[in-house]
Amino acid sequence: MRMCGKLIIALALLAVLSWNIYHAQLTQRLMFPYPYKETVETYAAQYGLDPLLGIAVMREESRFRPRTESRQGATGLMQLMPETARWIAGQMKDADYSEEHMFSPEKNIQYGMWYLKDLNTEFQGNIILVLAAYNGGRGHVREWLNNQQIDADNTRIQDIPFRETREYVGKVLRSYAKYRDLY
Image 1 (tube, rainbow, N blue to C red):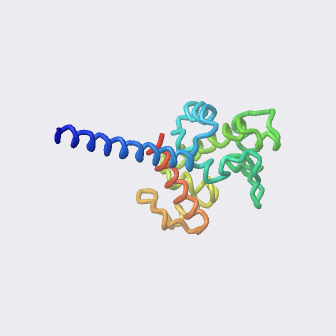
Image 2: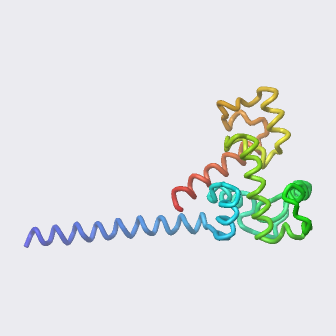
Image 3: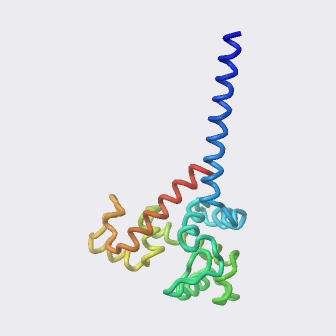
């Protein structure tokens, strides 16, 4: 009888522990949702990207609000500047581009994922440089590399000259790590 009681207590503790783990993960998924999953995964596959990187960028850029616009004029889920979106449209040969399309989740995600792919190609998969260029501009990142402010072979977030870009890269990388843990 004593053995049976200990077994019941052990099973009860295991059940409580399992519930707490499940509840913690559920809470984390509420804090790190994965909206637009199908669209993100479609374009990530098309452009050879990790979809979780795209969703982490989207989380930090817009908090998943498709009609958001920054003070600087960046629009949509992935917060693309109008001139960047026009350039992407030209590179993609998208003759139907309009600025209003950047408020469309489908089109904004497509353009944002394409842009991440383009930056990933240029900066040879160096995620810190890719994210720094996404936020601070590829021209600035090229300049930092040329002036040896950043070492491409030993890239560190703390070496990014712009505080806002340093903070942005850190936030996206933390979200990306969390998304990889959860999904």
